[in-house]
Length: 423
Image (cartoon, one colour):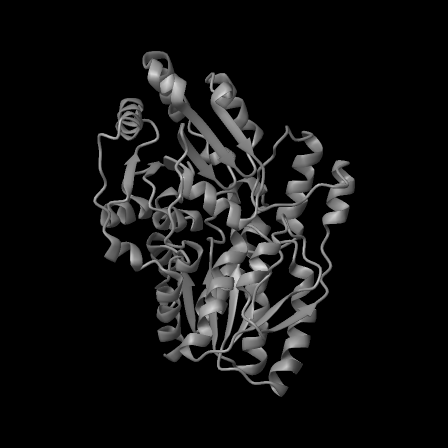
């Protein structure tokens, strides 16, 4: 099977994990993956450690890609700036220039800045697939240009096609920030619908997203969540932090910034001397300047350990040594359907999870089934305080349902994937 993905090692970050892990386990179930990925991608981070998971002998096809990011950097006067997904800025953006660049991005680069790779990829892969037939192709997005490459191949060759959505398209949390014209908005929706109705099967990472895709006209939609790789969690003892660490792993975007959570921590510091002495807030990854400002305003700077991007192997160590793992669910219209990849590694780490966001959500459902943590509404000050305090005082022991947690192993999820491939 041919997997069309923008993200592949040594590119790091969450976008690479899903299909890297599928590719790792597919040969166990009789499928040989072939990867198609850019030769020179705009990788937000580099993580050489992920190369260890690439199956030995796997065929990786690479073709050069042209992207407009050099123009973007020059326009903003930030020649060395790495471009990440979404709208996360560690420092305040330069106002008008940033707004202009976002408007151009949303209205001229449809569906995204990788659009210039679509036509040459369709040409290259059409020739390759005629000479090297495959059982199926998979496109994974975002970036959704990957789906348009697969759409072109479907039209030309009639090959079986699975479209995999790691995030929504028009329902993604920052879609409204793209400042789209009515024409551009219609174009996005039109392309999205064409992908959804043309693909032989659509995969999503969450239960809510599956229902949303059905409502948009998708046929044969299935949910295969993200998960954790058992190989990443050896059965060895890990020394827990001596402090009461609440750790957030991954990008801390503006939509994940919940002022009531910071207020709860601030009040607990003022009310409980022991908590104040032992509490540490740890962030691992990019933190938006709005989040940083909120942490400062709440008087939590002296408790804050700020760590930049580290390798995936280092991330796993932080997960296993933390006292509590924080999931801050985006305050966006699609909040109920958000199921970030790190959440499943949190499950596997064995540490208690504290989620802040809608209780009636996909994360709430999984926490209820697995009994692996607590979820509190983002505006419930007293609920958040009591949850944090119960975790600090270890008043609540979690009777984790390991059978439910095992359903999210990468090997098991790959077996689910092969069932859909067989169909």
